[in-house]
Amino acid sequence: MADIAILEVNGKRLEFPVIKGAENELAIDIKTLRAASGGVVTIDPGYKNTGSCTSAITFLNGEEGILRYRGYSIEELADKADFLEVAYLLIFGELPTAAQLAKFDADIKAEAHVDEDVKKILDGFPKTAHPMGVLSSLTSALIAFNPDSVNVNSEEDMYNAIVKIMGKFPVLTAWAHRKKMGLPLDYGDDSLGYVENFMKMMFNKPNKEYKANSVINNSIDKLLILHADHEQNCSTSTVRIVGSSHAGLYASISAGISALWGPLHGGANQAVIEMLEDIKADGGDTKKYMAKAKDKQDPFRLMGFGHRVYKNFDPRAKIIKVAADDVLGALGVEDPILEIAKGLEQEALSDSYFVDRKLYPNVDFYSGIIYRALGIPTEMFTPMFALGRLPGWIAQWREMRLQKEPIGRPRQIYTGENLRSFKDVSKR
Image (cartoon, rainbow, N blue to C red; front, side, top):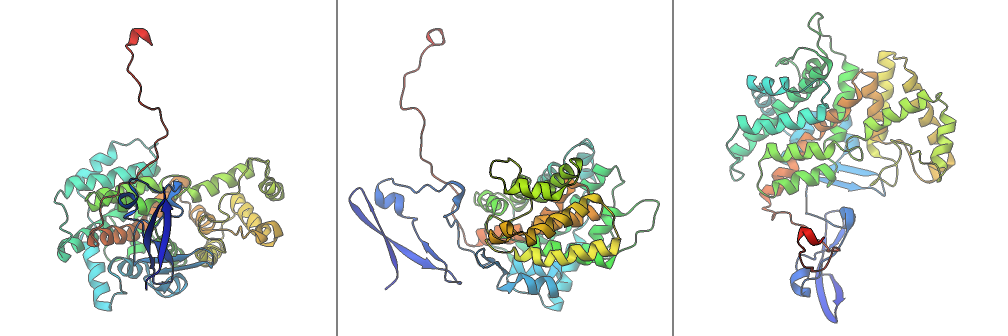
């Protein structure tokens, strides 16, 4: 007999099935609650206890520090796969064969050109515009250049939409950066790999020959893999709920970019560097700020430590810490901000207050350090996150549409005024 959950409401006994996930997670299926109970709903601000969907894409166990894409551990993927392989895995469910990967790469490159009229839209933004606002707008603008809706029942249509956005998104991301920096737009080089080509579009100077750095490219590749998906976070849930209205892929991803922009989500690595800047301006005393972080009466908060989901070490942070050390070693960067970061890291890893509470440096802490070392401005940190998260958003949108999920429509508990009569303005 299947497990059931029993709920008593207003003297009525209601039974709901308990479903079990592939990793033995349990969930009470309450989709019939409102109808069966005569209008009763649950309330769960922030959806911390609510499963919005079933998904076969990403498994996350925050208590044990586990992250897997389609059953593969993040540690093994970061060590053995490249970003395009992981993107294919997330979107289509299996690691690609050599032939599938070559075709995926070639098809993405064939769609990497961006209509010249997009430049006119980009020209309309001032240099002071935040790159995330620019990126969201340009992604949404792609709809105008690709007006046909995707037939989700056609594998060919779905595939073509996927390689289009995978091809164009790195161009738009790099262009947002070059606009910010006052650099001429770069169209990339089809002879290069996905990550190397992106880095060239970001950093190529018109008066210099671009030289790739394998240590840097490898570190960025790992960062993109680590950011590629993370279960039903704020931006991913946004992509799914926007897509549930049958909004197109580009519109749904544009909405996801806007959700990612917030400092509590994708903007966290930018907040890390801004915190380090503040510490530097105050003299750079890391011990002082570690003490402030432990003082519950002090409003200071240590950014880049701990995680809302992970109650142990963030598995992504273990991987990217090595990459951060590699980048700093390869570049030989001398930066007081990075020295402050290393000081905070060392103290947090040895201070019993942080160790006992498992407040370890997270992926945002180390990714901010890498981007800073590369000379990427802080406002570009979140667009870099978006580039990595793109395949996860695509995979989640595709899964949601193929599963024919109903339109998202949360309920609420009304706490406003009861019925009252209208008064003419002269009597108010």
